[in-house]
Image (cartoon, rainbow, N blue to C red; front, top):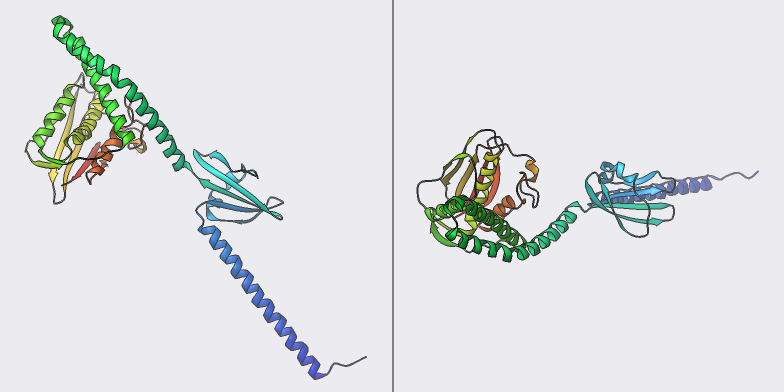
Length: 327
């Protein structure tokens, strides 16, 4: 039996240390690579699962952990597909490598909503164009009829004209929504705008005793008067509708004005019924009231933004909205 010399023993120990050192370096490199992969996967905006062939999860990010129930519904497919889950839409992608399957779920809910809004806007614009001609004819004939009808039948003709005015407002709002809002600014007095709002109110029939409180002092505004007429008329008409379905026989609509350094600031309040589905307030084609097309508040916000301002609900309990118009 041969003996190991001290030199050979020292060499063996050195090689052992070297192998251990290389192993530790390799282990550290692997851990660094694994940490980098995990950070990259975590950084991705979509949910990622890497699954073993036995169905166990090899790797996932936090988005995937939040959607763990969605994983049960996913299938490996060669082509991308869409899946609805918990009122959200997801684009599902999948691929395989050796014994691993990678699944990805991308939330496309907002994209689908915008696509649906665009489609609805195009359809609404087309219908509005089709309706505009017969409505114009009805308006012309009702004006002629009003001059010839018996006195006791005048209220009927007036109601026809009021109804036509409502349809024309809907058509105008729909076409504006489909084309986008552009403001052509010009200086005018508040009293001129108030006269236009009063006229819009007069065309909108209501049955209850409503008190309207508007700013009495006159002041100059540099804005698009027609657009602001639509903005304020939308709020006033919404307020009328809320009072009409309220159990009280009287109502109050108050429009207040405050002048600050940079903005004309208005607040609108009404004593009508509370707002339902507040999350739908500024969602196109989703109305918070029974009679409405869901465009009034959306357009009002777009009009304010076209003037460098904003529209927001500042007090849901008192139904108070704030409207800011840049000076």
